[in-house]
Length: 330
Image (spheres, rainbow, N blue to C red):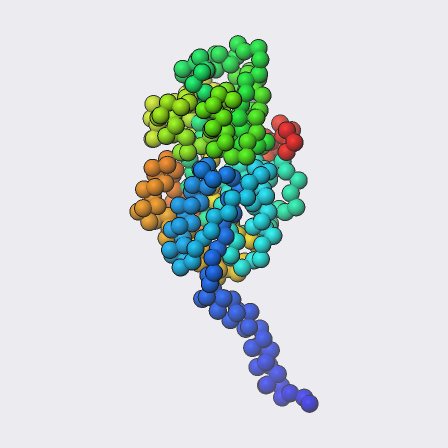
């Protein structure tokens, strides 16, 4: 039986409209169950702390619980892989940082492309890194540390958050610039590196300032210099490494949020709205400020801004990593 031409065209138009109608209906019901947020670093570290503060606030906005899942290993790339290979439905999101999405992406043999296989959501917050030393070290200031390192005949134990991490890159640059020798000790996250610094198992490390400020203030280890271009407001007496005699040595430690590629735009928009609502909440802002984290402006809390920022960071640091010959096995 032949359909009348008009009836046929009506059916075709209805079929074409179905995906849009389905996506809109999906967005209206999203989320209807808990959302998993993948964290590639151990509990207690800066990324985990940010994830829990953000996840709690986003959960209130979305009307569903956001479950934090710590999937450690390979400098955050295992957790990122979980996001990449999840169903593109918005129920798996991942928080990442410079280490997991810039440094590690350049050195690990990944089965995904950090740009093509992830959907950016928003830039979140950044905090400075700083050079920390165990209390038993003789130097009291950054210039004294530099002079002391130059005279050492044995390598100094320098803790990193895995090969190619921000801490590792800072260590490599620092050692190169002053002529020191470091023995790099990799850790799964900032928390275990901090514990070994307190215990004296390592001499130096470079960690996020926000997560270690309390221990510096408590006198559990020393803060020699921040890696930012200007001094950090939470510790104004701590100089930058630049003003301590190492020109150009700075690195920003930032965080972003991603989900699986091909997630419907309507769902992504709901997540973006939840992020922006969370980051304007006075309680969230107060807690992050207390940690020393600086929230990105609202104009950068969106997919386009994160994609642009991420690409610029890779363009800046991947050539440095490649030139240094850093590999995941280092």
